[in-house]
Image (cartoon, rainbow, N blue to C red):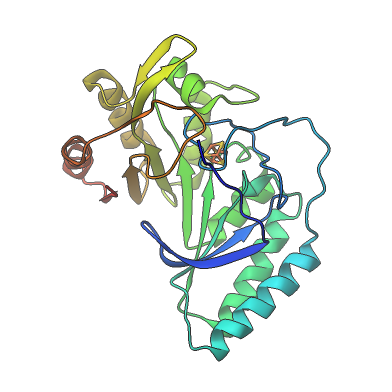
Length: 258
Ligand code: SF4
């Protein structure tokens, strides 16, 4: 299906269903998706080869490009709600991620002090202290947890270096609640294996993990764009709202994006 790549370091601003007027920062190559996961629903398409040698933009190049774009936006009186790290893969893979976050905070404070800095991450690099520290500095540290069940997690996210969900949760807990959990609800079939993370069993186990992780917020959503795997089923608004109510009943802030 028609998935797409972001062909710039800075893209947008775009109107995002979750982040309002969002100026995107892509720390990955412009012509290549590079990720530690290969989610069946990834809007950037399949992860072709995670062992390929890639060239990343330098910290200096990223700072200069962001500086120029923010200057232009200031001149046009066009304020972003969010400066969002997303793009063609996992942003925290960049070896200078922590320094780039420091640069972004400096530029945000200079041009648009009211804008939030958000990072959309799959949480695979949060065993690194530099990544934890950087994520603790941003306004919205949004980390992926699509299932509490190992087999569903592995099927949906296709991690290149699988760890257990228990290990992942242990790492998420180091933020002491300073994180948002993002979960894609979805069902379908891949290579003969069916999956559905909206069943009562799946949702019940996921809710148990939320109680352990204690995020300040949870974002749940269905597929909205084309996906690399065909035949994925979009979860109904009614079902997502039902799951959202269960999160709310735990006293955790929930945002349902239909
Ligand atoms: S973690 Fe994000 S970028 Fe990586 S494969 Fe999954 S959806 Fe795509």
